[in-house]
Length: 199
Image (cartoon, rainbow, N blue to C red):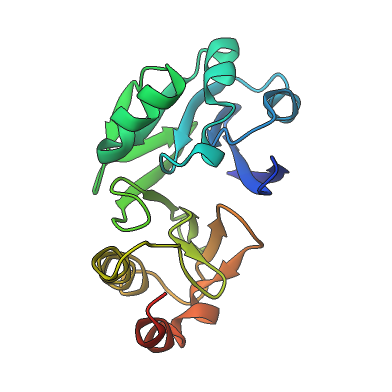
């Protein structure tokens, strides 16, 4: 599977185009639909996955949905809010244990509650090679995504530790919603620090 990332919008969002066997999947139609359309080119776009409901991750969703006809996928707890904000219909609501296919590749859905109620990550495990993990705004280099209260922070940390750090190896590549990629190995040693500081 090929991974191409591009920065779009005033908040420097990462949008990711994944292609396999000639089929494409876009993670976060964040902004600048013309820029994203140019990135997609003539690749048949099968799906657009929205990692969470925040406005900076969905600004181009309606436009790209209209021009590509791609299937729209989002985390079940965030799907209604995404529909309300954008006017689109989410075709597939997914959560823990669900899978999404692009070409011959399978992505596992991981629900991460805290940044929003329905944030999700996608994990691609290509055999012997390193896992590729697309985390939206739930995990960045240097810490978890922003939360607004201690309950949400605890929830996000619990999910990250149980569903991500406990399952995947240090060579796992993390592709966040903003900023540069990192690895779980680079972040793992700081989990205690994150807990202690509360953000």
